[in-house]
Amino acid sequence: MFSFQQIAQQTHAWLQQHTGSFTVLVECAIVAVFAITLFAVLGLVLVLLERKVAAHIQIRVGPNRVGPAGLLQTVADTLKLLMKEGLVPNLADKFLFNLAPFIVMMVAMLLLAPVAFARGIQIWDINIGVLYISAISSISVIGILMAGWSSNNKYAMLGAMRSGAQIVSYELSAGFSVLCIVVLSGSLRISDIIAAQENGWWIFKGHIPVLISFVIFIIAVTAETNRAPFDLAEAESELTAGFHTEYSGMRFALFFLAEYINIFIVCAIGATLFFGGWMPLHIAHWEGFNHVMDYIPSSVWFMGKTFALILLIMWFRWTFPRLRVDQLLTLEWKYLLPIGLFNLLLVAIIAIMGWHF
Amino acid sequence: MFLKEYISDVYQGVRSLLKGMKKTGYYFVHPSEIITQQYPDNREQLHLPERFRGEVVMTHDENNEHACTGCTACELACPNGTIKIITKFDVSPEGKKKKAIDTFIYHLELCTMCNLCIEACPTDAIKMAQTFEHSVFNRNLLTKKLNLPNSKIREGVE
Image (cartoon, rainbow over all chains, first blue to last red; front, top):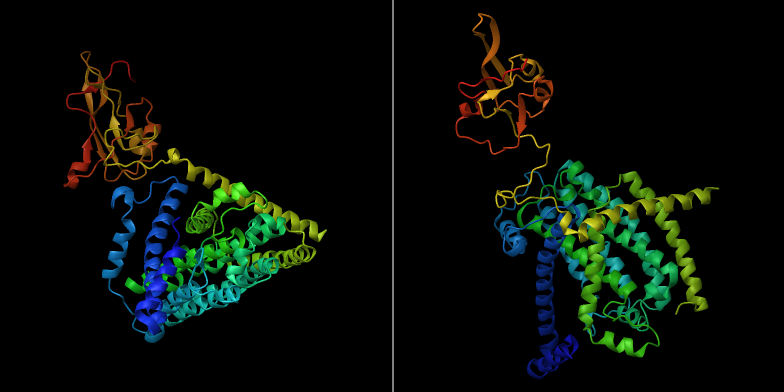
C-alpha cells in the first residue's frame, strides 16, 4: 500500500548510507523545501477556494476567466504581486515595517513543526506539542502590532490594537478547549493524542462536552486568525485594510499568505485534536469496518478533515456579519470563557470517572 | 433567573446563527441558484428581469401612429429635465386647431431611468425599453427624437 512513511524511511536510510554525519542537515534542507512548497501551494489553493466558496454562497460564479474555470486566477494574482513595487511610507519605522511580514510568516512556519500530516510524517514530535502550538501562535500578534505601529498610519494602528485585544482574549478559550482534549488523552504530545483516538475520535467518544469544546475552539481560532466575523483587525469598511493598509507588493502577499497558512494550521490542529488527525474513522469492536477504513491512506484522511474544517470556517466568514469591539469582548469574557471553564470541569469529571468510550 | 436568561441568550444566538448558515449552505450546494449572467458571452440568450428599465421609447403602431397628445405631463414629471416636448398646432379639415407634438426630445445622457414619466403619461404613449447597450462615440447621439418622422397621433386618443 502507498504510504509516505515508507518513502520517508527509505530516504532516511539512503541518506545515512551516502551522507553519513551530514544526514540531519540534508534532511533539514529537504524539510525546508517541502515546507516552502507546501506554503506556496496552500496559498494558491486556499485563496482560490475562498473566492469560489464566497461566490457560490453569494449566488455568484466567481473567478472564471483565467485558465479552465478560473483555476489559474491565483497564479496570475501571485505574478502580479511579485511584479508590483513594494512601497515603504516616508515616515514609517523602516526596520520594523520590513520585519513585520517575516515575523508573521515565521510564526506560521514554526507552527507547522508539530503537525502530523500522515502516519509517521511529522517534522518534530515534541513532547509538549500542544503547549508549543499555543505558545507560538500568540507570537503572531507581535508581528501584527509591529506592522500597525511602524506604518505610521491611524488605520493601521487601530487595526493592530484591536487585533491585540482580540488575540489575547480569544487565546484563553482556545486554550481551555484544547485542555479538554489534553485532559482526555493525558498527554501533550501530538502523536499520543492521535494514538488515543485509535478506537474512535474524541468528538464521538467525549460526549457533549467535547462537542461544546470543539464549537468554542472553532470560534476562538476564527478570532485568532483574524477572519470574519472577527476581522476587526482588517475591517475593510472601517479601517480600509487595518494593519496592512500601507503594505504593497510582496510584503502584502506575505501577510495574505500567512493568513491562509494560519487557517490551514489551526484547522489541521482542530482536526488532530477532535477528529483524530490522520487516524481513519475507527469504531471500537467493529474490526471489519476498521480494516476497510484503513485502506484509505492516512494523508487523505488528514487532508480531508482539515479541508472540511477550512470549508466550515469559510462558511462562517461569508455568512456572519462582523462584530463590534464591545460585542467581541462580551462574547469572549461573558460567554465563551465561562462556558469553556464549566465545560473543562465536565470533561475532567468524564475523564476521572472513565465515562468516555 | 439570571442563569435562565443567560442560557436562553446562548440558545437564541446559536439558533439564529445556524439559521443564517442554513441559508448560505443551501446556496453553496445549489449552483442552479446562481443569478450571475455571463453577459458578453450570452448576448443571445440574455435574460433580463421584467421590470428592467433601459431607455424611454415611444410606441408606434403599423400605421406609424403614436398615442402622444403633447400634454407635457412627462416633461413636468421628469426630475432632471430629460424630456423636452415641442408642440405645434394641426389644422383639421374643418378648420379647427388641434395641439399635437412636433418633436419629442429625449436626453438619454440625463435620464436616470426613474420611470416617473411613464407613470405620468395619461395615454401610455411612452414606455421603458429593455435595451441597454447605449454607448456611442459622440455625445450628441444620445439626444434622441422619439416620435418617428411623419408620424401622427392615433385617432380617438385624447
